Image (tube, rainbow, N blue to C red):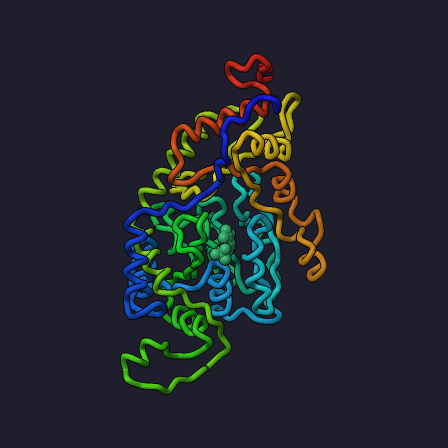
Length: 400
Ligand SMILES: *Cc1c(COP(=O)(O)O)cnc(C)c1O
C-alpha cells in the first residue's frame, strides 16, 4: 500500500478559508478609511452577525477564546463557581471558566454525536454550579431543549460555544440564539474568517453591555463615541481587557458573512457525499446527526473502528498523510491535558465516552473550496488504507 505513489502530489488540508476579490476590496477600503479599529465596520459586522444568528445583540471581540472569556465574565462567573463543560471540546471552552477563577466540571458526551449529554450534565450539578457551556461539536447544534430544561430546573445559565456552528440551526432557530449567550470564532478554519476574530451574541441587553465594557478594559465609552461626542473623560468601572476586533477584520467579516449560507450548503454537500460513501462502511463510521438540525459541518468526523482487516485511527492518519490527504483529531479530551490533571485533579475514567471516542475519531477534509475530485481523493485514500481500493491489485475485499 505505502509503496504506491501518493494519491495527491501536495497536501489537501482538512480545512481552509476562502478569500475572493470582494474580500480583498473590503479590506483595502477599510485600510483607506479613517478608522483602522473601532470604527463603523465593527457596528456593521455586529449588525450582520445579528441578522445571521437571529440574536438581538452581537459584540465582536478579538478571537473565539476572548468571546468565551467575555461571556463568562459578563455572566459573573467567579471564584468558587462551577461551570459544566463537555470533555470533548477545544481546551479554550474550559480555560474561559478558569480565567474567571471558576472551576470547569467536565461532563461526558453522547457516544454517537459527541455532543454534551444532558443527563450526564445534570448528574454533575452541585450547589456551586452556576451554568452549563454546551459545544456545537463539529457544527451540529447541541440538544438545547434538554439542556434548557436542566438549566431552568437548577437556575443555571446556558451558554453555547458555537465556534463550529455559525450558519447552523436547530428546529428552525439559528445558532447564536439558542442559548442565553453564544460565542463564535473567525479563525481561518472556522465557518467564516477574519484572521483572528470572535463574537458574543445574546438577547440580553445588560449582558451585551457588560461584554462591550469587558472588551474595552472595563471602560464605559469607546474612543469613537468620545470622539463623536467631542469629549475626553472616561471611566474604568471594572477590570476588562483589550479584546477589540479591528475595523480591518470586521470589514473582512462583513464580506465573508455574505457567503456564509452558500458555504454551509457546500459543506453539507461534501458531508452528504462522505455519508453516502461511508454510511455502511465496516471501518469508518460517521457521527450521528439529530433530526431537525441544520449542521454547519465545520468538521466531518468519522470514527475509525477497530476491525479484523481494518485500521486504527493513528495508522489511518499517518497513511492518509503519506497519500497527500490532511486530517486532524478534534479533540484530546480536555480533562486529560496535563494542566487540568495537575490543577483540578482530573483523571482517565471521568468521561469514558469522550475518552473512547478520542482513540477513534478523525476529521476528514471539509471546506467550501473543496472540489468534487478532492472528495473522491479522500474516499480513495480511506479505501486504500483499509486495503480495498477499487482496481487496486493488492486490494483485500472488505470483510462483512
Ligand atoms: C476555535 C475554537 C475556540 C477558540 O477560538 P479562537 O478564535 O481560536 O480563540 C473555542 N472553542 C471551540 C470549540 C473552538 O473550535
